[in-house]
Image (cartoon, rainbow, N blue to C red; front, top):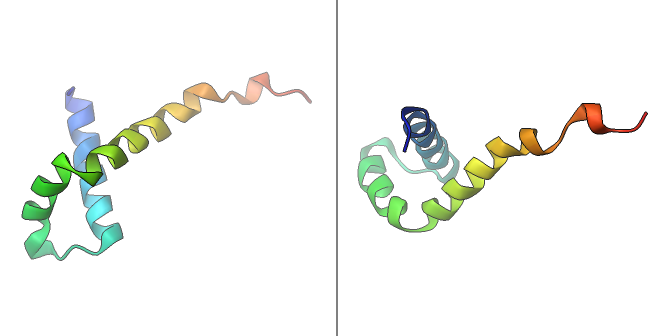
Length: 63
């Protein structure tokens, strides 16, 4: 991963842990497990979300 993607992944992991309610004391273990499981799919969705702005252009819309 690029340094930017590494930072984005860390931001995603923090958001995801907050979203699912993982206590701070358990986050390190949870993140290690989720990297191999459901979070990888969620990470791909997160990256797709970031690319959506490139797919949709306001300039391309008809008046």
